[in-house]
Length: 310
Image (cartoon, rainbow, N blue to C red; front, side, top):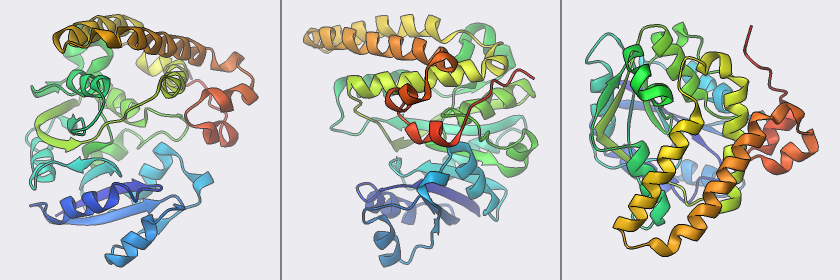
C-alpha cells in the first residue's frame, strides 16, 4: 500500500483522465488531493466521484509547503507525488516507480519519464525527449563531474519518495518560488543518496509555453538558482547546459524538416536567456516589476526569498 498525493487548482480539464488512470493502477493506494480553492468544476468532479479532498486558500499555496502538507496527511512510507496534469500512461506506472525506488537502499527518490501529449507542439516534444530520455539511470555524487546540475534534476510531477528519507533531509523547502524538487534532489545527492530516473514508467505531461511564458518561467528559474546558489554551487552552471540545449534544438528542427521554426526558436531562446539573467538579479528588481516578470506573481506578494548561504 502506498500514498498518492495530488495538488490541484482549476484541474477540470485533466482531472477525469487522471482519476480514470489512477483507478486502474495495479498497486493499492490512498489518494490525497490538496485543492487550492479551484474556481472551475474541479471540486464538483471530485465530489461526484466520491473522492475526498482537502481545500486550502489560493493565497496559501506554496509549492514546497503544499507538498509538505500532503506528505503530512499520508499514512504510508512510500509516497508518489503527481501534478494534476500528469496522466499515468500504463496501469502499472505507479507500481514500477515505487519498485525502482525500493530496489536499492541508497536510492533516496525516483522519478519517471514524462511524455509529451500527442498533440503538443514540436518544441514541447523536444523538451520532453531531452529532459526525459529513453534510458534509465541512477545518479549519485560521483556523476556530478560529468552530469553537472542534471545530477540533481528530478520532477515532482511524477516522483516517488520514502517518507522517512524525505523528512531526514528537511522536507520540501517553503521559501523557493519553484524547484522544490531539485532542492530535495541536491540535498539527497549531497547526503550520499542516489536519484533513480526510471524511463520505463511514464506519464503524459507537457506544456506548450508561449514566448512570453518562457520568459516568465526562466525569470523564476534564475531567481531560484540565485537564491539556492550555495546548495547548487557544487553542480554545473545552468548556462553551460543551456548552450548545448540550443544546439540540440537546432539539430532536432533540422531532422524534423522544421527549419521554419528557427526564427521563433531564436526569439524563444533570447526570451529564456534574458528572463534567466533578470531572475539572477531578482534582488535588484523592484517588487512591482517582479509581479509582471514572474510566472508566479503571488509568491512575491507573500514571500521575500532569502539567499540560503548561512
